[in-house]
Structures are given as structure tokens and as C-alpha cells.
Length: 270
Image (cartoon, rainbow, N blue to C red; front, top):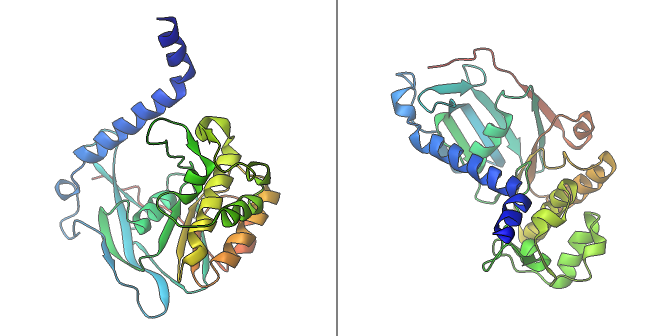
């Protein structure tokens, strides 16, 4: 009984997070945009092949998300939707007030959400980093090795390449023992977790031809000094691709040739 109580106390945050995610998944399962959308709107955002030399083209994209009750839908952004194109070697920063739909737009581009209107033209080499890093658990428990974390989900790379990636993201002190088993989600700080996931991205990009990289506040827990090092490494590694970021920091502007500000001029509820 004592051990059980200690387990609950030690893992309260994790259990609360799991409950919140289950509730959110249930809301999404209950959501049916076909019952709440405007008559003229199609049910799904179309995802198509790239156009010309552009790695990303959005045409009139507007996203529908469920309200907390799961019975109504909120349309994000301007009524005409978002239209923008990003060419190879392009960099785009998306800014705006909280709740306007910046993160939802990146998730939609990544293919994680498709309720709404408009069309998205992009290639298959798309990489998405959310603000909250994903640190997968092991097959036999929460403990995994750094090697497993960096090679997730199924990447081939030499140990020297993994160690180089860790050094670039200022985690050099972890590079000596790639086989060490640990619960990295609790061992590392929020900023260290973001850097670990960034290192994973750099490893994934080793053999990428024309990657489209989507960063949703992916450096928000890092200092501006570390942020500079991460973006410089990313832009060098993805030099033949395109990078799209969501972020509030003004310091991000130096790494992006274009900046757009999302606004919500309707606040429509249907």
C-alpha cells in the first residue's frame, strides 16, 4: 500500500497529463464538422502534391476546431483563410495573439488535423516539432537510452553522428553514454528536452532531400543564446528545404526572411 501511494505521489503530474489528453481525444472523436460547418464549406482540407518549386502552398486555408463541449465548431483566422507560399530555401515566421490558430495551422500542415476549408500543397518530407517535446517511453517501461531517443522513430545513423548532434544542441555532457537507460522525460529539464528533440531532428535531416520543417515554439524553453545555436545548425542542415516557425520572441525574426501575423477578425461560432 505504501509503495502504491508513493507511486501516485511521484507520478501525479504524468497521470493528470494523461487524463487531459484522453479528454481531448474524446472531444475530437465526438466532433463532427459536417453538422456544424457552413453550407458552402467542404468537410476536409485537401492535401495535394507540391506546386512548382514551392515546398509549401496554402490556398484559402481556414481551420475548424471543436469547442470544449464538443458540439460546436470555431473557425480560426480570417474568413477568407490563409494563402501563402514558401519556396525551397525559404523561411517563414508566423506570429499572432494566443488562440488565433498558429499552432493549429502547423498541425494542419503536418497532417495532424484536416477539418476546415482550403488546400495545402506540400511534399512528403515534413518534420514537425511541437512546443512540448515528445519523449517516447521504452517497449518494456519508461526507461530508454539516448540512442533510442535520437533514432526515433526509425532512423539509421552512426554513434558519431548522434554525438555530434548532441554537441550542437549543447548536450555534449550526455554524448559519452548513448546506451544509458533513463526516464528522460523526468530527468531532463524542459529546455533540455527541447534540445534533445532538436538533436533528433538534426539526425533525421542527415539524409533529407527537400525537407519542410515546422517548429511550434520549439525553442521557447531555451535561452536566446542557445536558440541562436539551434537555428543556425538547423538552417545549415536544412539548406535545401524550408523552415516555418511559430513563436512570440522577436529574436526569431533574424532567422526568417518572411513574417506573417495571424489575426482573427470574426470569432465565428457555429
